[in-house]
Amino acid sequence: MERFGIFETVRVEKGKPVLIEYHYRRMVGSSHSLNIPFSLTLNEFKDKVAEAAGTGTKLVRFTIFKNGKTEIETRDCLKRKSVSLLPVYSVKRCFSALSLHKTVDIMDSLYALEEAKRKGFDEALLFSDKGFVSETAFANLFFYKKGILFTPSLKTGCLPGTRREFIKEVCREMGVPLVEGFFEMKELLSSDEVFITSAREDICPVRKIGPYPLKEIKGKPFYERLKTVIGEVVFG
Image (tube, rainbow, N blue to C red):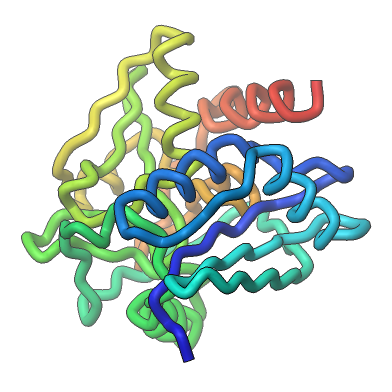
């Protein structure tokens, strides 16, 4: 069986594939870099994803393999209001030629998520081989402090996620400073807000990391402003 492939997981809500252009752009880039044939236009890709979703809010996984075969799988999208993160040190992220692409080899992520859930947490917080925070098993990570947004550098081995790219663009337009860098867990714990981003719910706040509950947010949180922007872009 062919197991050399790339995939995108797209949320379809109210009949619309959310931020589909970002998913398409990443798949095209990965197909070129990894020499995987992908010839669909944006509209063709969008139509296939929307058709597979049917009704309701769904997650559609579109996979294409080195041999040109494709697979489309659909499941319900269960959004979360907040998440707890378990620091998992048995799995490390490492920057490489493949860390920049969403490949079908996700056993390390599944293992980390299983460990987190077994201990009563929603997601696994992962670290680079140098000990810096990187991402979660299936989402990018951000934290906000004193008017500045921070996110781990791609050099920590995290995936260049679709929402990560969107938020970078929004911050430039809003004039909000965004710093990509190398951070320790203590910097997350002392921040004003921590949230994760993925196709599942776009943005989801973190309420707890390991045994440490995060501070309560006073006023309208920054992540809510970002969610509003996404909603306006997608649904008008």
